[in-house]
Length: 520
Image (cartoon, rainbow, N blue to C red; front, top):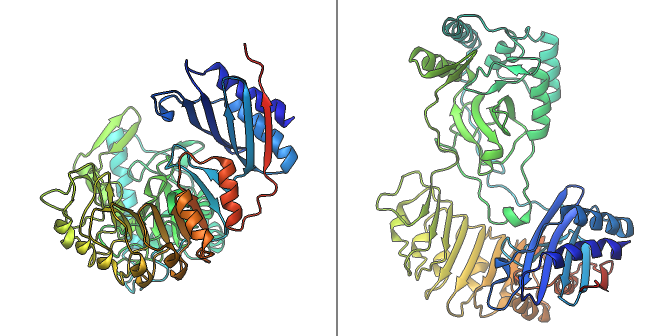
């Protein structure tokens, strides 16, 4: 059954092959959650990715289902290699080994599926301020807001009946904490702004959630967001603006979504603010805020006041029976720069991606960036990391053209480092970096890789096949690894299985099949 399903995929690959191809490779992760495809045809004089393979999703789904029946894997990593002669090989394994072809290259394995990288805000000083919300004022502002909208629209807008005290008590019980007093007071006026499937979008274009929906969304949104090692190993959760108002977290049980843009983003009240915040403050969370929440207002009361001011100023558009507030442009995410270092650096800069500029790059202008959390140099190099010494950089991607790692000695903030070098470098100093958990050395020439076994909490490591062989032959693999990457883009799944086994994974259940497709 597996062989028959594999042949259907091979037929698609061969049928779409360009003239002069010598072999083709298709990598896929396939399961009930979907199918991904990467790979290409080898054609003399052309890069593999210039001639991508087709995406036979239906056939790959059928192949994954056939493999599932044999091995029981919910999701499978597949690799098919075929030649113009019709000969092909199939290798398959559970997706604890994942192909990264087309997404950085190589293969990734998860050694400890239950481990998650800690987020920076694991228990900071909390705010001792009193809530800024005022229940009576919030109700008055909502009524005034509705009256002003009715005057503009020429009719009052019908809203749902109030939520009962019993329903509010039950919601708070299920959430595990009380609603802010001003938000609770608003639910005593109306249970959201939707009737059936039609919302009034009262809160700056956001639909005000019914109480039962608030509880349901909170259940879905309360936990930290884990996007997997491929994306999370060097990710940063940034600070909100103003700083220290919102915890640097991707999720929190004390964030209660009460309105939605119906695009995966939410307005939420924050009941566990950072030291400069106020309990009950309004923040934005959701799909577009994976770099951290955004601060909106110190309370729902203040948010309503702002919306009322926009109406009074005429900052709205009327479209038939709908009314839309014209909000000032809001920056999505932290202050960041992509490109070269500008002459004037924003004081709140938290991330900079320096791309394709002349090397060596002088990092000295960044020395005053006291909020800089992410510094990535892409396709360019620097000779001096000294400016990084005093910066709160957590994620550093850099190519060193000369110089060494001395400025990183004892760095208290650095958690991930992707390092490239133009000459051999000594890693011994990394033993002094207390929170370094993730390391990519696949572009670096390293003096002694065995130092890695002495890093106290190294959880992710990316090396080339040659580097892994040198390290594993010494018996000095870091004992704390939760995930690892074989960085060679031309590595085969067979090679990845051998490498994984050396790191302690049981790969004995891998599935192998060969065959020949009759061609004319």
